[in-house]
Image (cartoon, rainbow, N blue to C red; front, top):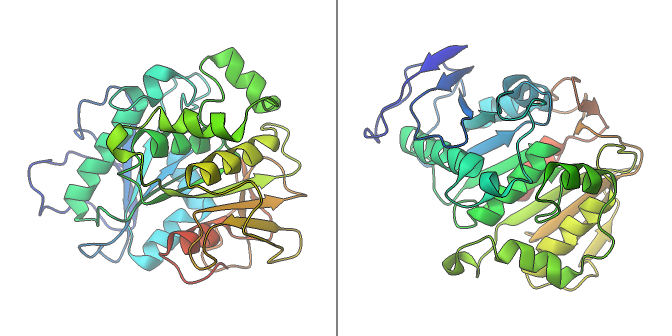
Length: 318
């Protein structure tokens, strides 16, 4: 893996690395969260104004391997979209989980959240990305961190996706995080869930919230599936919708999709896969299928393609 030093002062510069590879960037900012910044430049050089996607790995995962196995590298290569792939260090968390529950790491302008924000700012300048089309996706602890980024920086991201993650405000200590992962809080109300997000965002950004795609396996024994229901309640309430979904469908056998908002561009969607465990779902028969790996499994449905379609950067799910 190459190591690259970019100049944040040269907005027209392009990274001097071979295309189609993951490389590390070392001077992207003050990096208060002490994270590694990895980037993927697709083989087809990204055009100015292309989207930018941030991919957050789960615990004990290698960031680049996860992005490849889940199918994000292949999708980015085919569509000409650069990726930012933050990686956690064992010195921050011995299981290399993003610290999604720690206030010092999810508060706007601090810790890991600020490090990821600096990575986004740097990548936008280097790739000439469209600031209106920045997206973030994560699995498990990375999914919880993706939700935290949407709450802390709602004006930065157009939309996000959380796979087997947690609602905002579920925990603020490590013991509480472990408890709520295994048993969702049964006493949280929709209003309280929405307030937990709103209080983390600047007042100027509380009128327009990013759209959110949520994915959860029914046989997940690491994260209580009820957390996905709470996350959907949290974000649908933020967008001003009542508890019942606007639509409730089964697009493919073994999958349920509920949406809140317009059918063509819902504000929130919740995919539940009853027979799926704790992993990122891929489809071995799809275009850009990815490959099974640690916490990446064939579920007969490509989360990458459906998420990209939800965001509006891909036509239809695969």
